[in-house]
Image 1 (cartoon, rainbow, N blue to C red):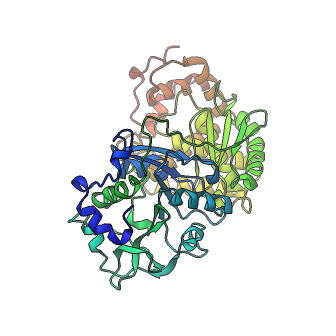
Image 2: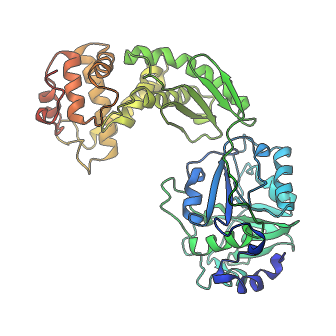
Length: 476
């Protein structure tokens, strides 16, 4: 096994710069990397497939670890991708031991981390092996070392955003350094494997995978180290799901060891929110929707896949602050509530409006403040909400959200409390589950039948480019 001190020499001999060391030992040569991207210590949409898309697509398979890290089967994995994690969910001793065993057995670990206060829990892994993320900001210009240019002669770090350096001992070989020679990306042997520690900002981060920075050298670097542990490519490379599930009646609560302290409190909030959503919409969730609630290790929000809603465990500093969590649960549940036909244009605004209405019904003053603030932001673009067509491709986001809230409030004011409930009830009656499209013209037609009045002129008076002739729902 080549040591990292001989990194440059081993790369020079690698086939086409991709260094599939021990290829003769592997049953097949493709895919050559079996990676696991961990989202158990801190969830992000980027780590849920985007890292793989940017750096490893076409070179192997990736699986995500949603459950406790120490439980994931790494026997047929040769690359484990980690982030620093969230301080509220520390790396457990069992997980640190599991990572060490993976390294000792020949696996490669990439730890993307920057020092912070408090220090990210992933620092515990780095410290075990003689590296320490610091609070020292990297100083320009940033440069690569000969070890890295041997892998890719044009390697540079021109897309590097500000990051912090890593202090480490002589067992590490630096691959990227700042102007003073302090490490920003460094690697060492651990047993038969390799630990790579690098500033988080050397790598992409956008959820749409639009920033594959440094892929020209990150990809061959990862392939070089990872493939020194052969994998059985014909064997299934599965994702690992959260290990705990509790049936609470209306749904199943899902969580892992790290999110266990937050799970039941979030479930209790959902159980309080649910009857308010039923009252606001006038309907139960569509059949098959919102059957599971997954607790995510993040303060960064959540998502809805229809059948499952996922909620960030400490969104808005929950449980210290309740309103942001109530609004988030209402929002994500609202996304599932409107299915199987998502709302056109205001699918996001109506979800948040539902969460706001829940907060109002629960007597939370932040709800009215949130509503009024967004309407005020929308009026900057259209003071009386009659001029700008919110359906236009270039309509500003704040205009769309503020105008949407204004419309919902006006419909409730003009047609009585419960107008939104009548809309959702009529929508369920008029639209077959297998209907292929649901346009804004369709939406206005449904609203018209829900309130017993032709609303096309009213929407047109608010600047919406709607046309009754473009929907087949008008005459029903």
